[in-house]
Image 1: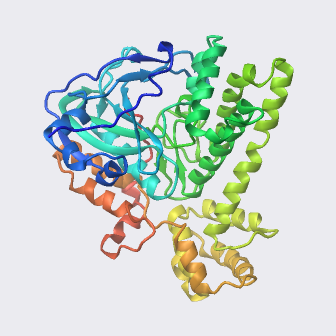
Image 2 (image 1 turned 180 degrees about the vertical axis):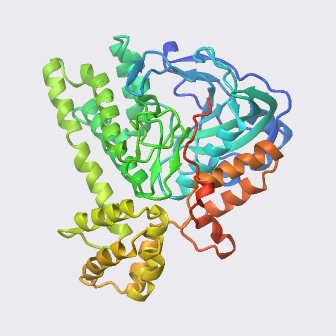
Image 3 (image 1 turned 120 degrees about the vertical axis):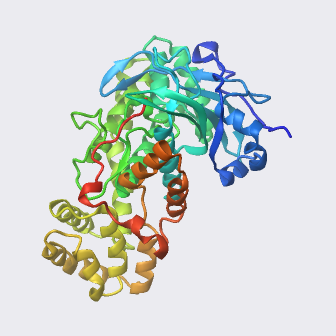
Length: 492
């Protein structure tokens, strides 16, 4: 029984300076933890063969599948605002590309598969904890409808990796519409390689923005397209209380997907200044800073494209500034539309933005749980008698009461009946998110007790975030004070 991957290699067909050819480093005793069987089927792969001993060896990097052309991609990037001219895949190896059931080209990459020429003295390995975190959060994001890389499999290597202490090693098989980043463009721009920037831009247009190929100004249109996707993506993050944690330019995907789940987290109580990442000491990537940082990253992308936008630098800068000027409007349109949906408003009217912001301000002042406030508000849409479940989330419940009077007046101005409003709100306000304390409990059980039952149960809960799950209702609750996780870590 042979595992077959119908690989193609459009990125590996680019010039040799775009990547380094390197094979995964074999491991001693691979053990399959989790295979994402529905995703495997969607990718045209046989889940039974993937879960076989041969398949497990492939997913661990011990065996290279037929047709693979393993490469580590080159890129640069601004890390916390400081430019590093060469980063690259230091612990990830792209095996190849497949076409999924929707006709979309997808990368299949092994993360934690050993050192590459870009490892910068690192071991190229991944510990089990960060692999489980990325599997959990990326799959949760997918079900929440947020563009994201996906997790096909998690495999233990049978070897230890040394971080602060020895930890079980693991490999994540990551799937993405591509792994091209703003930092990929920066790699060539920093070297003055305009031809490399052009080749990369043409590849990106063909792969992610094919409708722009015949545009009058295709590179200008590409810049506008990437800006629009990033604006919408970050708006979606904010609407579910997600904090990426490390929004460097090398973690900003050109395709508009969420990529690189390191010290990411979902907020419990609402706080615009919330930071979880242990390495974000200055709060650069705090929750409310994410739109501003996205624009900063996109400005770096625009700088890379300047030679392609116009022959005269002044004209190119003018065009780039005009495109970047659309970010705020695109972000606000997506964010405000999302807030209206979360509040059960079917039309846009003057005053809606202030109404939403006043609720958020009251939530911040009263330490109200972000996810539960909106979820319970969905049920309160039925009648004022159902307000009690929401108001008890506020340190001062009267803060909610004062706001709710205005909200009920606003929803009374629309013709939809309360049941229709409740149904619509419950479809956008999840009851279940990957809360930090739950993820940490999963990691603790797996790392310290080799117990993956909590991991499986959490994945089950998160697969149905908008449904009531009475038997698992405890997963919706915020942490008790002693359960709070205030810092998350990168894991490299």
